[in-house]
Length: 587
Picture: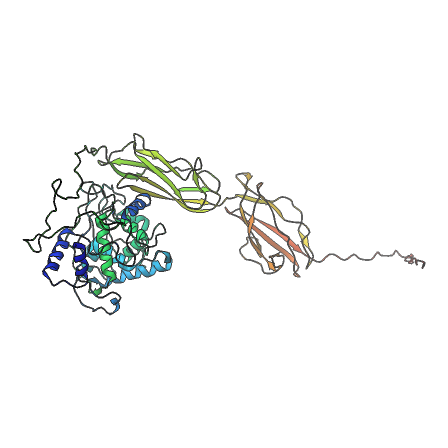
């Protein structure tokens, strides 16, 4: 019945006493103003969303506190009419001009670089409202930078997550613990990976609304999410802050802004007043009304003797109709020394290797407890993500290693695949509120440090003819045959190979047309390469062919085009007569 009343209130029937009571109940209970089934993105299964987030995402905010104020029940305008909204209106419904422009600019940018994500600016607005009240009501300077900077509380494990300093205080002015920073409340370690320079000033500033909004948009689109799909949108929001209450609140504002809003002057917005208190565990669980079946959670009821007061609790005694679960006896909680607190990089260096080779560096992480001391026996899952063919020793792409007594866990050796490119190694540890570290890695193409001809024959051809001898070279790396090395062959004018030639010898393409550069050549298993046939045009002279390998080795080969020499007639000595030609008798 309460849900039915709320739906009617949203349609504008808010003048009766029943409506007033329902409004009070909603405000007191902090129930979402829009259920997860509303809006074009639809609903979703928050439990499934939580599972995805736990496996692939950290929390952009470090699960910092956020504002829980909900949107008013009366929507700012009718659906589809946002373009004709008035320029003035309630500060609660409006969005400061610079902040609104940043959200919309981020939507347009992401639509160009990642159209499959279908990021709506209203989602950025909902998160910006919940995280900072739209940069404290639009208190930004002319460049869109929050003034003063927006900093969350120290994430010191006292009521919040424990995140040791990762930026030396560069972003959050705290060299002991991290703090969430800026209008979109990024923790420094996440900003280091996702920070953007959206306003083109050469800086990635988490306190700048343009930079922060674009970074938030790209973060929400991670893992190939399509935000028009309800489950993907829920996963994205939970990756920002792993809390069901957070998801409810953001969804409420998202639905609200989809119905319309208006622009207000910078600095005139209202700041929410109800910060959250992070719970010890933010592991998502199914939300009432979000699943496929009806919720069994009783709706709060307004107190009959206190209009607008807090809802009275439902029945609580056994046998009186309560659906609350039976209380469980208290269990002993792990001490701070036993509680997993943080996961850090333990000195892993750059991850680079040549195709087919083993990486010299191995990924190593350090687990700490809630007091900041090393913590042993923590399972850490390492995962390789990418299409280079790289795997851990043993051929697996995912392995789990427990930390030792010193708190460190080292992944097995990485073996590079045959395809050059970039990939990532992700380390995840902890349950309920997992910690994630991501390492960038690179596989480079096979290289050679030397290349030379296998013979020294002069290469000569007559104008318009084909060179009789083929060009064969061998590439080596550290004096060993370099197999699978890419070689580029180019006809050049000068000894250094700085200028391409448009005359003289040439190769032929598939259609038989002249081609003076080849880029698809590769050495065989012995490091040997035999070039395709080379032809001469009508221009005589000495020309050069330059071969360059992946790795920078090169060799320049001379090609000569000249007409064949004519044979001179024999000279007759003085007093001698030239021999007469002998006639051949006819048959």
